[in-house]
Image: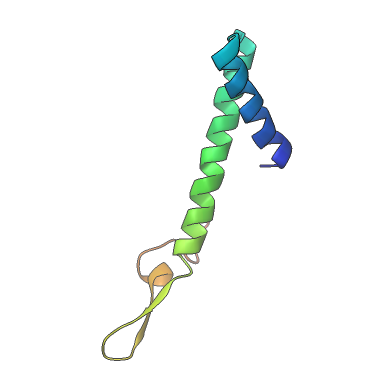
Length: 75
């Protein structure tokens, strides 16, 4: 997702609030929002998969290996 895509999402939002969107613009807005949400989820998943915690006994637990998709292909 590029900054141009994010700017376009914002343009469509403001246009929808002021004068409304054409059916093509509504479709574009839905597509861009879906891509944006998918991007946010992928970034969050990547961040969470890289978290390690230290247990009270001193051992380190890699949460990505224990619960995440580390080593698996991202969907």
